[in-house]
Length: 457
Image: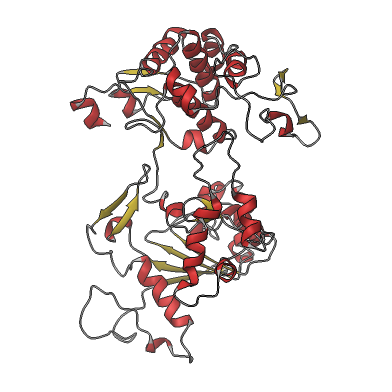
């Protein structure tokens, strides 16, 4: 970003509740009240539509602006059609497109039909005037309009912009709506799918994007495909449920599950046998429910999980309802913490006054710390926010007796699969960077520190 400012005449606009270091070097800064982002972005959409700052050729060709919505969809008194007050949720049946006899969406290329997405969007966002933005967001009208002008200036084919956001948008009660509203702005400007465009997250972690790209997220298959569940008994069932139907003739459809999934599913066992598609699909795990971190800690809290391995994660500080997370970990028989440094989770059993008011003598969880390396001490690849894989070299060896995650997990794996019981001395922990005789426990301290959360320790 700074290189673009210095050498490519780019402009930087910062909208933030605080005057940040980024704001200090920005071409323009505008304040905003915390949690009012949608009103601000809605005002930008209204200003763009009113001032014809829209890339119309792009909008007609690459968005659903011309699609017709069902006649029974409406918006009244702040609610869309289908709202169930008792359940506090929407039945989205009326939100669907009007379809022809072949199942394709009806369109109006002129964008004049009052039921097309374009007209409904104009009607919906007309309420977000600069005066309303100033009242809701606290952003002075003149400053809001200046930001809108910066954004609107990229609606031409020869200009493009990107929006960079961080956790202030995502970890929010309306996080998805924040991102989608900005995506709508970029679609109106024609800035999605063009170099320098898009909506980009400023990741705070060293490799958070890699969890989905590397398929270590349990709900996904490679290529951001949804993993099968117990209900998907056959590949045909899975493909039927997961393959989106085209909305227009000859529509490009990335989610062609029958093609995207078939090859990796067959490839799972192609090296082992040639007994057909059904067997290949059978090798894919089938989920019987959610296994994200929230569900995992709910199971821990219910006493359904006895042990937990925490690697590169600090749930006591990262998850909502700190009191419940701490109570859940107190029900564990053991907790393994693989971290280079102490953190709140590894010491959840210690009393830190109002910061962590617990009774250590009532917590029987055994906490085992395994010192790991920091990311800069381990060579490998990162996946950045643009889905670009980047290689990096280790800047230094791990401090003290720390080891890389691969070494730690690898040794746990080999010991668990050992065919016969072995004594601890038979498995000395050794660094791959330390050639020479294998140390024993008599000559070298074990590379782990243990702390049992019982009274007096």
